[in-house]
Length: 213
Image (tube, rainbow, N blue to C red; front, side, top):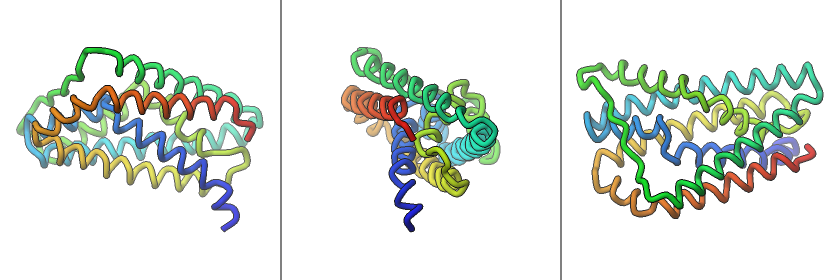
């Protein structure tokens, strides 16, 4: 119980960073929105499951990779934290820039309305796994929750929790954005939401850069 209380703040912060990252529209979120609006709600849900499976794969690979690197090189965690912190600050910059921009986000259209549900799930998995920014994002998220000397179960909790969050949030997107009214509501609140994202990413990035753990 004492160990859990020691690592819980970092785990919860990692969950928070991941949650805000997937709420902010990216290729995966826009694909789920597009499938729900232009094809069907079930297609959006299948795509959401595929995206969540991709998140699980990225999280597992990152935790295993970082654990191996840190075990081999004691100074590696410091380098990883700096890289993760700088990436979070970059996300903060992008969020603030998006909040100031007059350009709205565009729903990504999904081609092929005759795919099976498994086909849409496979497409969601591919979208998530081929996102070139995913590796940096996962390094930042995992390095927030993994302190120096953290046991392996901490990484397991981060993997399981982020998978559950990914499945839940993307499924909610699929359900909500089968209605055009939700898109209009999101567009009206876009600037406020992006500003809040920027504040969180800036704080999380600064925390990683100044952390001594």
